[in-house]
Amino acid sequence: MNRRLGVLGVLLATLVSTAPAFAQSSKLVLYTSQPNEDAQATVDAFKAKHPEIAVEWVRDGTTKMVAKLQAEFAGGNPQPDVLLIADSVTMEGLKRDDRLMPFEAADVSGFKPALFDAAKTYFSTKLITTGFVANTAAEGAPATWKDLAKPEFKGQVTMPSPLTSGAALVHVATLAQDPQFGWSYLEALAKNGTTASGGNGAVLKSVAGGEKAYGVIVDYLPIREATKGSPVKFVFPTEGVSAVTEPVAILKTAKNVEGAKAFVNFLLSEDGQKLAAKQGYLPARDGVEPPAGFPSVASIKLLPFDAAKALADETENKKRFSELFGG
Image (cartoon, rainbow, N blue to C red; front, side):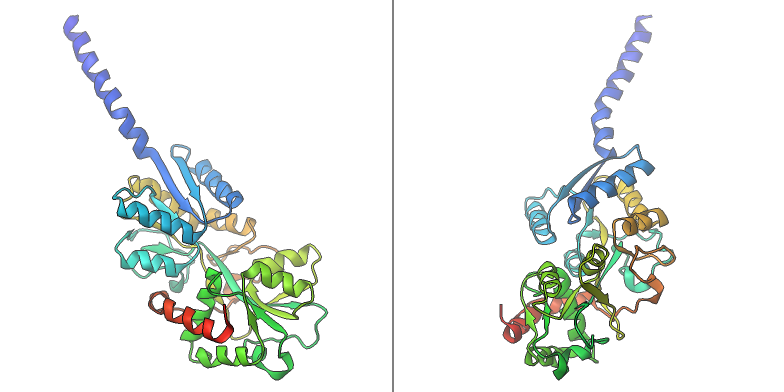
């Protein structure tokens, strides 16, 4: 009897000693730049599919979030398993520094190859495109990017600054890389009186208020505000649009790799993409119905974009833009 109790005691002690490790491994730590409401909705939807995984999430803007993460790298104790942040240029920097774990088995069904890293270290979860907004009272609305540089639109256009907006930085890099535009196009905008300062919200305010007739802007702001009665409309230029894609990635230092993989696959799944649409964003996966006011993903033409080149050119792009537009 005593021998049995002794064996039982050993078993119980083993279970107790391994319980904290199990609890630790079942927790998923997410760092994200999503708005708080979106982040909570994303975590809630994931936990509905995976109730066995506890999720701890931390939210801040991409720049501050990456600064926090870099400090953790320097201290040798990075906390997150998964990153869900604004743009692929930031992910390219982390990839360059060998911080991201390839996920070869990620389910990319319905995703165009341009929407995930070829090495499968990060994956787009939505499309936040940049086109332009027009005040509905303005006459002769432009239909193409090049229209904005025409004399009839002189002094009527505003845009966000890449010194303030990550989406604007991607947009400028996209134009600079594209032979049909290049820096000569941006120079033409500057010569035509285009102003550039602040972020996308400032552009919307300027155009909706009639200060400017047109603006370069991310899609969801004017589309959302138009449904509320704001006198604005969003235009997808015929040459195509640039986009930030809110990519997701698993860190090489992830403690809960299986939970992280489940989270990535959830975001890429049809259910995860329907959630993005419900939150008011254009889903990145083909075949998922977009929110009201958006065209289908298949009908949108994305301008070519090399995230690695954008990373290499970031300092120079900001410098040249500042020389043209100030700020």
